Length: 470
Ligand SMILES: *[C@@H]1O[C@H](CO)[C@@H](O)[C@H](O)[C@H]1NC(C)=O
Ligand SMILES: *[C@@H]1O[C@H](CO)[C@@H](O)[C@H](O)[C@H]1NC(C)=O
Image (cartoon, rainbow, N blue to C red; front, side, top):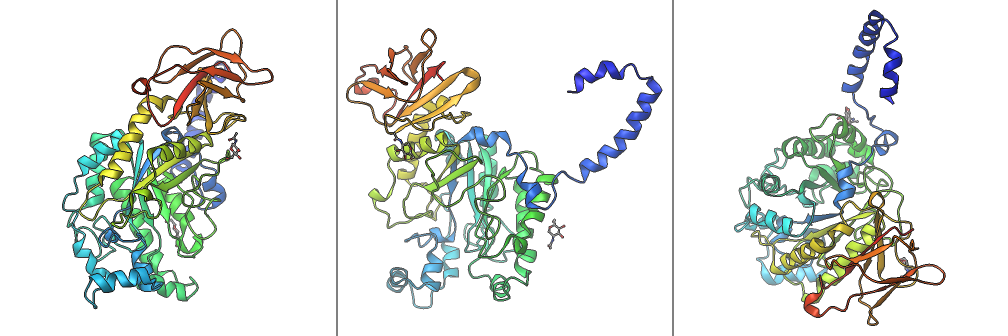
């Protein structure tokens, strides 16, 4: 729009033009400095989510903290044991620890002895993920960095005696192309100031003012996370957390203002409604297209986000199930944030590592259908179940990812309409164009190549690239 205006401008005398510029410039600069976003949901919700996030499609979530020490049942261990007094957790403590043992006593046992951020970074890189999100602080309140506001309940003073957030941040940024992100729980189950605020029905705001908000600012300024994953409103409204004030600062002034993405967990009632992308609920996977960018946060262990020693092998999703989650999610416009729980000593257990590496081998072949793809007019096929679509409109490509190899060797696709002279069908990782014929009404039948087990480009799902279909 600016370019065609230029010839017309040149007709105006130079003096007038200079005067005009002088008048315009000072007016623009302070306006820009004052920021583009107001601390209102109306303004903040209108911010476009930085493009990298939609292109990334796949990230890794890490739940690590003092709960990784008991590593029993759930990362909600402290709450279930002390607050809800669930017998399984009470008995576990009775049977394994001295009677006066407190949850705080787990702090020094969180050693991170074998934590090697470079090794983690290399595994994440091999998984094909494009971002990583670490729990900088879960509801227990223990911070994985040396927070000035978490006296004696942080990883630098207690347990590892290391700045875990920084070590991972440095390794991710030095060794990989992944974006670094942080999870932060707003509330803390048992923090005295939070409990006091709560009993005032959140009329008092001691906890956010002296703890949560300063920590959030510190985290952003020090580690420049490009994903800020808020969680745990503790039943308090966003006005209690001053979420809109914080987000306006994050988007206007913070060092990550241009690239940061956030989620929707910023106070009671904000989930699935306000903030950046929507998470709606844990393991959210709607199976249909959403008009707003969203993320399916889920975990490889079906029952826990933190590491559990009591997990059985059947509690872990198989790679087939994980690929299915990824494909369904991306076809419906979401990103997959897949969680692992390292052990207290910093090990990513071989089961988690294997799943991550398997995902990477699958994405090496099929990443073309996933990364930077768009949603198509149909999300899944109308005839064959477990076929999910993505597309790249600029390249005139539609991808059909199918999760079951048909025994007939022919794949029926009800949704795409071929263009007789120009449609081509190719199996990713295979190469040669495949034979296809149009179905009578709509759709096509693709003749899949007869491959032996070892010729298969991958084993947990396959992708067809269809050119020139509508
Ligand atoms: C909320 O945060 C903004 C930005 O930091 C600040 O200017 C404002 O005073 C805060 N409001 C309250 C009520 O804490
Ligand atoms: C497509 O997905 C929707 C939602 O998951 C489901 O109801 C429908 O049965 C699926 N269609 C096929 C053919 O699998």
